[in-house]
Length: 301
Image (cartoon, rainbow, N blue to C red; front, side, top):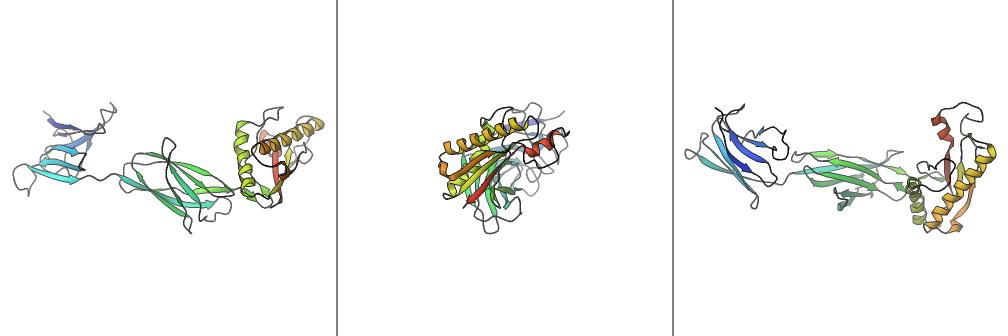
């Protein structure tokens, strides 16, 4: 007959109890279970030093004083059933890594790194050391987002879910994509709906990178080029790309950039294809995509 006794429910609804009917270290062993939170959860033996080759029971946690207690008749005690105490430490882990340039793989010092909790609040922030490194002390069993940022780079955002392993190190390197490469501001492709030139929400997100660079470089002047693939008539593509270039310009101006800082916004249609996919040449969608592009050339720093 299995004995299960001395139940205690912690503040997190973990139930602790003693049992002699499982694979034990001794007679009565202390177990913990999340069955109150998950009906399919199985009990876990607490192991040493809580359990011994004897009876271990009456597990209790005093949350206010960060102490716990249990009873045992193990050997070398001072009586028959002795009370043992232990201190409770908050479970802490560490998130650490380096921030580097995604193109050159060079380490980036003085980058800003933010730690965001699951509701989107910035709870810690730091700047990287000369070797590009950063570190955060974090709680166990939590979900965090880590954001790396630096002037003239695109942010990198990564998620970390910590475990329940005390002092575990979670390695997380961040890779920032440079926005200025040679004489261009480089962003991800801007997509337009078929036969339209209005700026979509996803395109706005990318164009904000252009706006940020221009705001941080107040004397910079750029020009915008828009290109299409070869599908559709040459004349139609020329007109469509020009409308898209000018819609792109107008969006940047609407975000507070003076119009004098955009020297031109011109569409070139399919006149400057990057591959063999000209009229009447059969190509895959991926090959056509190469030709649908926008350029943001820096004319003056």
